[in-house]
Image (cartoon, rainbow, N blue to C red):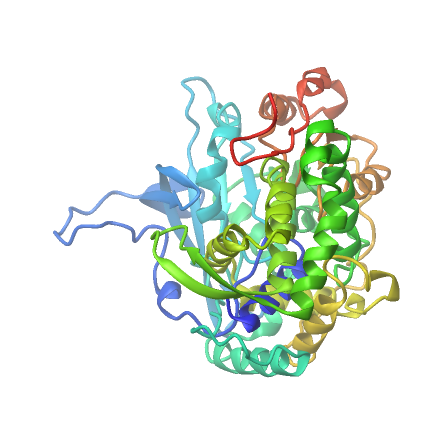
Length: 517
């Protein structure tokens, strides 16, 4: 992995808060298609009569995701909205919308569910197929609406790609990252005014779609950054909000610039603690955090030249493994405790000089992340809403991530066009709207204390902290059942959450065959 790409993965994933990155030169091809333009044959097809939902005309389409083998049959449409709402006659954005109709045979409910993707920068249309099993019961009576937030997916995608090649000696300084951001902004500005791709603009789009489909009220299901969108919508349009589900939430009050180093270290202490408490793991692998510190120190002093097998092709390749690469891999594995159970073994093996597995996983993950995020939209959001919090802190210097990310992101944001943020944007959400708030005990990004802060001001809200879970927990254990009950009744306090007690902890791997029996 080239070091510039490594730094960008860490900087943007951490500062933007939620899943990954897409870095820095416009991807023009992806912006020219829509969710409904996915046929694979070239033969002409007969016109299909549109299905109307409110004033929007939908036509059949298939939704697919790299995270799911199956495709979903849906109805797709476009809605044009002004890019700058103060200039309604100016440039328009065609919002990409998918509609999943109720699957049951009985009466359908009038209030649809809007799924709000994370990032910022993920496409709701592309992300949802992997989430569809979680919505199985919900979909029996309700429509699910997927809206690609402006700047993502097929809603005027603001995508930037990393420089290609294996330039391991590339300049990764904040100054170099700033120059790359400036070049990307200049190119994207040919098709977009980057000031108008904020959460506030997205909330206005969401309400425009609600009105267009003729829904009096909606249920909002936000994951990660999507919880910010849900909270902002509930603030601006309380009468139109029937319920909100906040999975792995970030409080409105929080600036996202420098929270991630400490949150990751706290989560690793809990996750690595499972190995320290397991006699077999501790005996064979030692103290995972101490081992990680040794590995990072070794690689900072001298990055390792590694021969490894490409995880996709099986081809033998060469690459340089750096401390920043390992830190990024540890962070992404920490999202998923099941995968994090392998980290102590991988780290121990690397300290014995066997770097190939870490290298292969890092290369594989960088490709997955690059395909997941719209970097330009991500910068428009975080630079407008969180730039003031992108500051370095002395207490973060000794963490796994350190201060490289806030300093790099601050440099990028200095040259990125910024939109206006309402004066009350960072006010806490205080609403009687029914709310189901979910957090993972081991979440390295949005720890349970964030959910506790949010629910204090929600009189009809309830927080569930899911034992042993990481980031994005809506599908864990019996949570899909509780989620469906909440959407049906809009009463979080009536839920019987005892079924969540059956969730357990991942037993750490002491070998690549698994944990000790």
